[in-house]
Image (cartoon, rainbow, N blue to C red; front, side, top):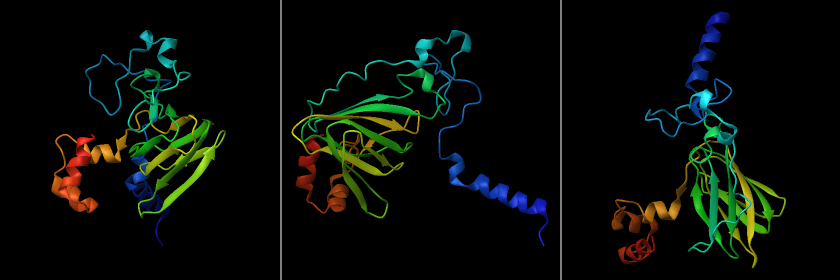
Length: 216
């Protein structure tokens, strides 16, 4: 029979090897670590400002009461409040955004590589969904007061089915969740992905690829 301390060591090594150990933003080791935008120290996150220089303003942000400008090609706008605009979020593992979607507008398919997202529809109605790694779509229409969760890293979207604006508040489980827009990243990358690669991936001809690239 294995000794108790041997079993403990095995479990400890297994836990340390688990991806979940490194899956989220690091936990704070003090009351706060307000981001020091002036620091030239490169760390995983942002360096801390001297606590003696921290003010209440480092933990506050205003502006989400104002609708975002949706006069663009897709008819949507996200006003993100992450560590880059709210220094007090540094090391706290959260951020949020206001999502505005024009009538029949779309928040295009995208992913947040470092954060799970929870959308609360404040006004209007949105058709929302995400796609799993095995290609299954989970989608439904969410009305005012409803909530929908997008699992971390999965491609997701929000489409306004109605002839009136819709908006909501988004919570994200990272101070810097990241954003990869599917179409823009593939057809608007710099330097660009070769036409041959995109043509084969999407089963279209290179002329169509070039036409799509021109839009980005």
